[in-house]
Length: 570
Image (cartoon, rainbow, N blue to C red; front, side, top):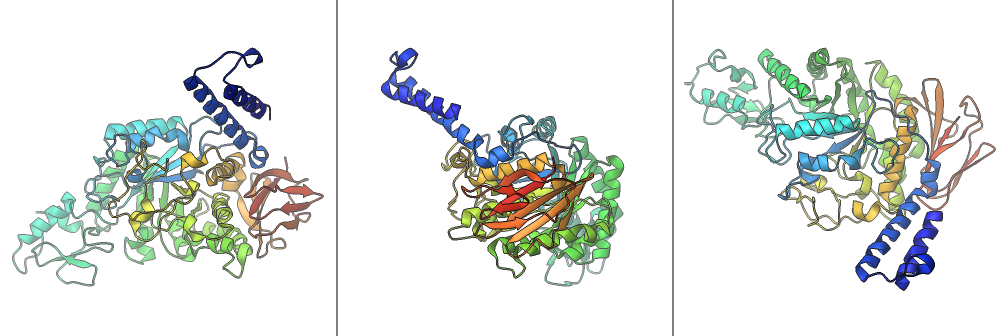
C-alpha cells in the first residue's frame, strides 16, 4: 500500500510539473513522461504482488533437484527470433530463458518451469522437423552446434534440464541412409535380391516387393516399396536391425556428450504399429542403452492411446509415458471443467487417485507425465466460451499443473493463446507482443491461418494480477513450494468429491496435503473435518479466478467459483 501511495503522489506531482521538497522544481516534458511511466509501472507491479492470490502463495520455494520437473514445451520455429528472419532460433530461446526460469528462487519474475522439452532441432526439409535428414547436427534455421552448447550451459546454470525430441520411427526421405538405399535398389535387375554387404542401408528400412498396404510407397524407379506410416516422405526405420540400433547408440552419445538430459520418444506406438510387445522391447533396448551411459537421463514416450495400454509401455523401464487421458478438448480435464461429463469434478479426482495403482504395477519407479495440450492438439483457450471462459481456461491449467509426476506445459498456454484445425495453426508464434512486427516476433509456419488471439499477449498480461499469465505463474509457484504436488501419491477423497468438487490428497515423505477444486459457477462450502492431514489444516495456498477469496473456518472451507485451495499442516 505504501508503494501505491508513493506512486500516486509522484504521478500527481509530475502532473503539476514539479518535484522535490514541496513538489518544487520544474522538469522538462520528456523527463516527466519517463518518471510518470516509471511510477505507473511501480503501481502495476505492486498490484500484482499485492493480489490476494499472490499473498496467499507467498513463502519460500522448495525445489528438489531430481527427475521431477515442470516442463515447458518449446517449438523453436515459433518461439523467439533473434536474427530478424522471422523464424525462431536457439539464440532466441537463450534470450528468453529468464522468462522460463531465471535461476533465482528469491524472485518471482519468471514462469518457474525447470525443464524444457525441445521439439525437433535436427536438420530437416520441413518446418516441423519430425523428418530428420541428419541426426548429429542442428538445423541451420535454428543455429549451430555451438549455439546449442551455449543453450545447454545457460539452462544448466538456471537449474533447467533439457530433453530433446527424438524421432526414431522414421527418417526424412532425404536422409542419406534412405537415398543411398533407394539408389542401390534402382540399380538391381528384376528378381535380384538386395545384398546388405554391398549397401547396408537396405536393411535400415522396411523394403518389400509387394505393396502391403496404403502406407507402402514406391522406392524411386525400382520395383520395391517402403513403409511410411505417417507420410510418404517419412520412411519407417527397421528397428529390428542391429545396424540401426548401433547408429542410435552413437547418436545418443553425441547428444548426451553435448549435455542433453534426456529424450522424448516420438510415435512409440508405431515402431511396430499397434504391437505393444515389440514396441516395449524397442523402448527397453533404448532405455538400457541410454541409462548405461547416464542413469539420470530422463526418457518419456509418446503413446497416443488409452491409459490401460500406454501404462504397459512402462514395463520397458523408461521413466514416463505421456498421460493422454487428461489432455485435449474431450479429455478428463476439459470435460470436468465444462461439466460435460456425468461424473464432473469427481471423475477427475477419481482417475487421479487410480493412476498410481495402474502405473506402478508395470514400473515401481515410474513418473507420470500428464499434460493438457501439446503441438498436435487444439489449444486449450478454444475449448470454452461464454461468461466464465477466462475462469475455465485458468482452472483447467491448474488441474494439469497440480497433477502428480512431470507436468508438461505447451508454450503460450500460459497466456491463453488460441489455435486449432491444421497443425500449423496449433504452432503459431509465441505472443510476446500484440504487434506482429515487434522485436523477436516470429512469422509462424507457412500455411498458418490468421488467428485472433483474444486473450492478449504477454506484454498485455504481465502486469495484470487477474491475467491468465499471472494465474499460471501462481499455479507453478505452488508446485515449486510443495514437493508433494509432483511427487505425492494421489487419492480421491470420495466423501467430498462430487460433480462440482474435486478433492484430492497428495502424500509424500510422510506429509499429506489436500487439494480442493470448485469447478462450478457458484460458491461451494466443503467440510474437511474428516480428512486426516496429521494435524490442524491451514490454507497453504490458493488459486482464484475472481474477486472473492477462500476461507477456512472451523474446518468449513468456502470456495468461490472456479477456485482451488491447498490445505496443509505447517
